Image (tube, rainbow, N blue to C red):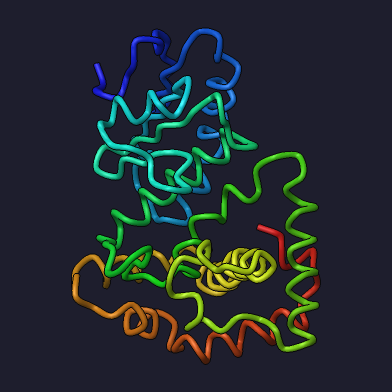
Length: 261
């Protein structure tokens, strides 16, 4: 029995290599979470070059206090979930749920796969070896497409990028090295999140599933390797040259093509 189960989580769903632990009153949320993970598996395996289904556990706890108790660690300011990277686990509160439990689960699993693939580690406060725009962009590729409003949200995001490009307000990669979620201005923060998604979208369009395989191989094998050096070896671009390519893509690409798989 898992160490993250509380006394209320008496039920368990299991499919593939996924497990969801929940209270019986939260059965619908648990079913949605498991179903979304199942449907996302093919995309996860393609983007991250996996050969086996990823192992993952989700715990739908009644509140944040229970999460703090079972993990024996208080939640930090702004922390509304707990990802346990070493145990491939996500702990969520059904009292304060995200808009989509399924999308949140897929995003958390993407972070886990990404971090393990590149042997990621923090090198500063909210800063990883990999720049935030690249890590966030890749890890949001699947979750951003989940939900009834996802297509319209992506179209709106693309429109925002095109408007920013026209007035030369797209954000340079060197300003998105630390967590894009720490950008204080909410408008710029939202732009950074959207831009990260589409910068990763362009990478995956050009290199398909080869980008993460090659990037993670370099970063995982050489733990002191600079992320930009690994990026350059994979793409033949440094961040600034890739940003120039990205700006041209935003300026010229059709919105429906930009958001398509």
